Image (cartoon, rainbow, N blue to C red):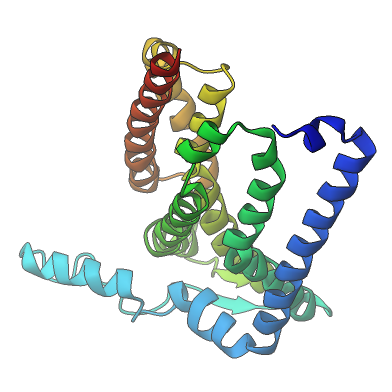
Amino acid sequence: MSTDDKEMSFLDHLEIFRWHLIRSAMAILSFAIIAFIFKDIVFDVILLGPKYTDFPTYKALCAISQYLGLEDAFCLRESPFSLMNISMSGQFSTHITTSIFAGFIVAFPYVFWEFWRFISPALHANETKMARGIVFFSSVLFLLGVLFGYYVITPLSVNFLGSYQVSNTVANQISLTSFVSTVTTISFATGIIFELPILVYFLTKIGLLTPEFMRVYRKHAIVAILILAAIITPPDVTSQILVLLPLIVLYEISIRISVKVIANQEKKK
C-alpha cells in the first residue's frame, strides 16, 4: 500500500468508490440501451429460444435419443405451452427489465474490472502479482455459468414446468413475465454461482477460509449445494443433478486454489 493510500480519508475512499460505481452503471446502461434497441434479437432469438423445438439443446437430446435406439423419446416435437401477456404494461416493463439484465451480463467484465481497480491499491505488490488475470478468469467463469444455465438448466426447466399438468383439462398458458423471469434468473444465478473459485481465493487470502476447513466440511457443503440446486432449478431430479455436478467440481477446484494460496503465503514467510 502506498503512502498516498494510507493518508486518504474515509470520505476520499468513498468518493473514489462512487466514481467506480458511476462508470460501472454507465457501462451497464449503455449495453442495456443497445439490448433495448435490438429487442428482436434479445427476445426472439435468445430469451424465447428455449420455447422453440429447434433449440440446440432439444436437437442434441433428440440426437442422443436416436443414437441410443430410443427413437423419439427425448425429442420435443411441439412446444408444450403458449405465452401470453395479461398486464397492460407487461411487455414494456419486461422489455426494460430484460434489457438491464442483458446490460449487466455483457458489462460484467468491465464492472468487475472497476471493482478490482478499487480494491487492488490496498494490496501489496506481490499480492497484486498473484491475482494477475483475475478479471479474465472471473469473466470466463461468469460467462460459462450463464451459458450453462441457459443451454442446460433453462431448457429442462422450461420443458418440465411448461408441460406439467395436474389435469388434462387445464392448459398451460404461461405469462411472458413468468417465462422471461425463469430464463433470466436461472442463467444469472448459475453465472454468479460459477464465481465460487474467485470467492474462495479472496476468503483464503484474508484468512477466513482454509483448505482444511473446506475438506472437513465437504459433506456439509454438498448438502448446502443440494439445497442451492433445488432453489435455482425446478423440482425435478434431472435438473438438480445437472446443477449439482458442476458445483461439486467447482468446490473441489476451489479447495486446490485455497491450497495454492496458503502455500504461497507460507513460502513468503
